[in-house]
Image 1: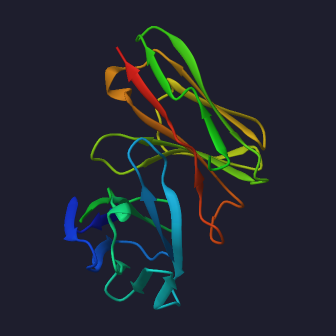
Image 2: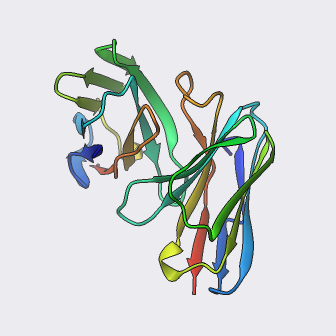
Length: 107
Length: 115
């Protein structure tokens, strides 16, 4: 069956460091993959979409990679700030979501 | 506000009640969705509407009944729910069903508690 796994339930890092979140999937070949941010009590907010023929996508301090051979996407936040603390979700092309990784950036 | 408005924000209902959740978007989107989010579980896609036609129903119990009267409004009618139905119910919309250009726009959700 199709499965989407985000590397860990929670990730704690120090302000200024780079946060790296992982999204792995099995039994699936998505044409694209999306990343969302969700704050407590709110709905997810769209951040980035990357297509299967794109290796990397950037938006300000965010970078996403997509390796269809490894069936994996990496989501990086550089120069992290406490305001980046949230849960980050990946979603495959048919809008199946991973369970999310809760990121906490400590000052 | 994201452009997708959900009401009410919080709802407590008994197992014998009937209630409805409402979702409204004026973004000009053609597809709308209902998702269920339970603690520590991935978002579960419940229903998909494209151009007001239901195109997907992911084995959702009949006690949940969606309605899409026009492209701007989406309802989720609830009746005889169970305590395990307590969750955050999220509505989303997208320009088209793939959401490939701008992703999906979510509302803030309705926190439902069944007692």
